Image 1 (cartoon, rainbow, N blue to C red):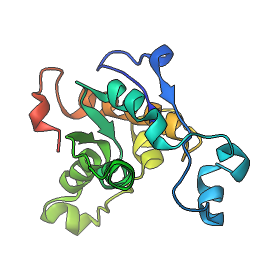
Image 2 (image 1 turned 30 degrees about the horizontal axis):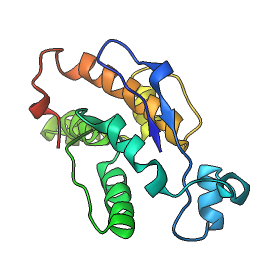
Image 3 (image 1 turned 180 degrees about the horizontal axis):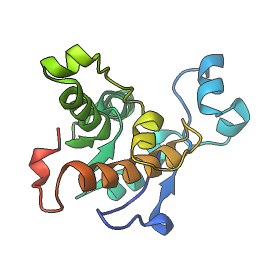
Length: 171
């Protein structure tokens, strides 16, 4: 789990938090390759239940920003249902959804179809590249949180204004 507090002007790196927690199922080879979290990494890792108060305290009163809400919301919701028999639903700003809308707008219209304008990837790295943001190694919770914060800052700067009401961009 990676959390990076930020606003539209600044990312607060010193307040960033990262937890590796014990999974409920054995690690699969594909997961180890993608995330780089190995059996050694989780040997002494706590169960989510042990760090849950810390995580929820860090999220309290904040708007959560993610890249692909389905994964992030479901991870926490399912994990909580398994551990405390109660789930969680929370509003998020989804940078992938914003980028999907940008791509839909970019490819809309008969002229774009005629020109063969193609929709581009909305994966985190590809989206960041379009805004000239640096490349980070993917699939690390803290790095992805930082990358997503930077992406939202860029998206707001390019497609919205600083006074755009939050309800226009959250889901």
